[in-house]
Image (cartoon, rainbow, N blue to C red):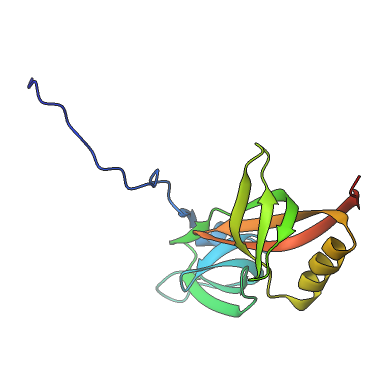
Length: 160
């Protein structure tokens, strides 16, 4: 071979896909699906019968998991559709900054400071009130397709 060493520029991404393919006919209610490039939770699935020629079609109604918008899509049941990798992680709340960002404690002891407070008023008031009262709060962060958002909050008791 050659004596030269190869140098590769790192792009900072491991190359893991944000979605994976799944046959449309196997996607069920309460599962996840990508509609119009948005990760959605499936709230309704209906399948039409095949015509004289052609495929059975699946009609999906989904709610965007980040902004709550309702989206619809129709896909032939034998075709593949994209399913997002959705993860939920719990972090302990350390601090709320004045510009609307939260400081969270990860499992390995590091801090995560790049998340905004949620836009949902109910969740927002639960977090702010609980934090003001000095409670120990654990927030659930949902992540999919490169987006992250706080989706739930739990009270684990007062700070000692």
